[in-house]
Image (spheres, one colour):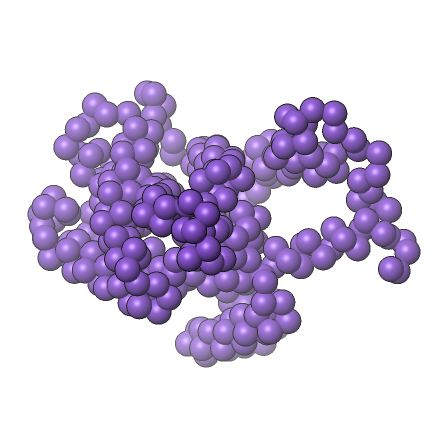
Length: 354
């Protein structure tokens, strides 16, 4: 009985409502944070930082934002890539037009710009839902792609349409090495994961879940659909816009509008579905699955000593990747987070079988 909860009694409301009320959860989280902040920077290679850890963390932040909208509030969105682009180009324009502005403030203002755009395109959710809302947000994606590609002001009238982010300098310190960039992104993701967790546990999170489960009943008991849906779009867009700014400045360095096309929107939606709708942990698990699995499939023929052309490996990678997604959705429709919960249930009774 490794995961035993018996005897862990709570005598105050504060203790009963803490984020991790079980001792084993608190110890596990402390170990994970210690490894992430102290062990990984000392042991991981530069390739691991650039190809896996940094994109995993940034996409996790974007997946958390999308999960707030889709998983917690039940509003389907296919415009996440466009909202990431808003954050990226807002941060770029703020950084080059107001050079004295602190880069952390630039990132937060970029998230705020994405919030405003997200709320504007989220207003149709007051009248439509389901597939109709998905089509509306997809239209927002195409409109934003067109705007950033055709309106020269966003790219500072760059002839090629490609822009380069300025130096990553915060409080006079320039983040250059992959380790420094990883620690910066990790700190931001930890802070905003804590924010998202508290939001979803509070009154506003309860209103989101009520709208998701049955909007008519939620309205009857006094929850305002306007407030619940608009705040879900606002918070989700802020997280996604912040992730877009980090993706552009920390991971890409130089980018063009195609970096935030509709494929990015579908990628993030797959992360949320595979990881688990309505679960913060599911956003981490889904991002890990989407980021790591293609790299493993790409390297697998070399590990097995099988010679294949790059094009054939790419096609097989897509086929296996799609088949695994379908397999996971059939085996566990509630995502990887549900498998994690089942594992914890088993550990409560181990070594007994029932």
